[in-house]
Amino acid sequence: MCDCTKVHLFEVEFKLDGMNVVPTHKNCGFALNNKQADKFQKELVKSWGFEEDED
Image (tube, rainbow, N blue to C red; front, top):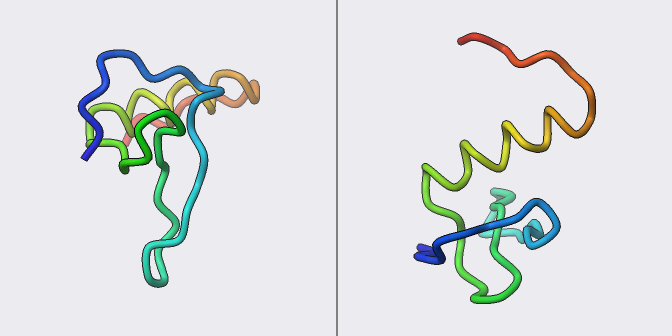
């Protein structure tokens, strides 16, 4: 898991892990942890201009 303190939107790439697509930090090469993945998803939705789901 990635332990980097800051992960920006442009520093994330997607890689295959078996049959799953995993968001990965470009600098360290590790998969994002749950907190980072949630933050990334919110930033991505915001940048695309969609409304956030309140699930």
